[in-house]
Amino acid sequence: MSQRTYVRKSRIHGRGLFAGRSIGRGRFIGSYAGTRTTRNGRYVLWIPGNNGDYEGIAGKNDLRFVNHSRRPNAAFHGAELFSLRQIRPHEEITVDYGPDFPAED
Image 1 (tube, rainbow, N blue to C red):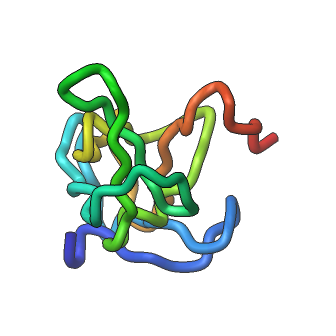
Image 2: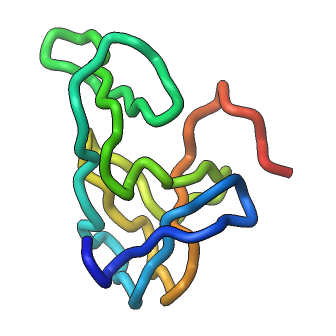
Image 3: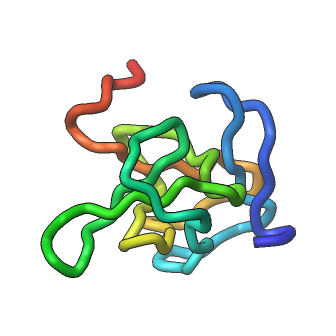
């Protein structure tokens, strides 16, 4: 991820992940890295497993700071994060956590 992204204080919540430079639509941003887990937690990303169950990854890299938005500019495909549209330099990178997560408005 290097200079492509960085972490700083977020207006949405705590710390956030930001674009260090312009990221084009459909571009790979990074992979959510961490240890496998069966317990939910603050930085756990749940992804579909091979047998129809969900598998948890307890985040250890900067992607754990991606915050929620109902108008996201990125999305996870499994553990890989891709841009949904052009992301401007210094814009916060966000994903939609899903319908069970409270709206930010």
